[in-house]
Image 1 (cartoon, rainbow, N blue to C red):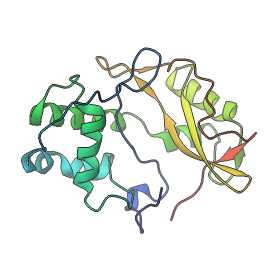
Image 2 (cartoon, one colour; image 1 turned 90 degrees about the vertical axis):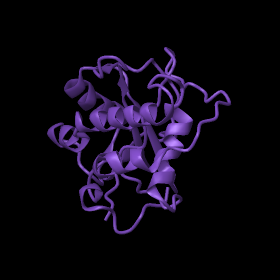
Image 3 (cartoon, helix red, strand yellow; image 1 turned 180 degrees about the vertical axis):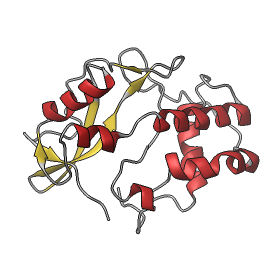
Image 4 (cartoon, rainbow, N blue to C red; image 1 turned 120 degrees about the vertical axis):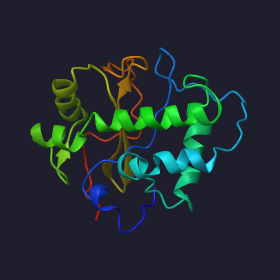
Length: 189
């Protein structure tokens, strides 16, 4: 991913949220299934964009407009009927995403667990810190590689849709790009 530069102040050394994705009991994302949806009205974005810019910011350069990124997340993941349809469903989806992001400060959790930027860690070390703080057994980690080095790209944490409580993700042996023995959390400026 190519990030905007400079990053918004809050994201310079913090985690951003990519999305809120409903999944089946096995942890696999629910496929879109060919549903089409009308465009989200500007009114929805006007009501949520100030909070979205803080809690669910678009930092990926591939999106010319941040509202296109958010609409893409709604079309791919939100419109599955779990939040309702149309503008009301889209707004509920975005507000649930904001609430989920507000509940967790990954940077603080990792710092408290003595996990620092630009230092090598095993997957187990990072998962143990998250387990200790969130009380869940399974989270998913995804990495990118540069040469022989691996860098944490994503932390995927599962939530209960109804209670918004953290739950263990289903067991998954997929390395999600974290094939090396260790990886590090890069610093972005």
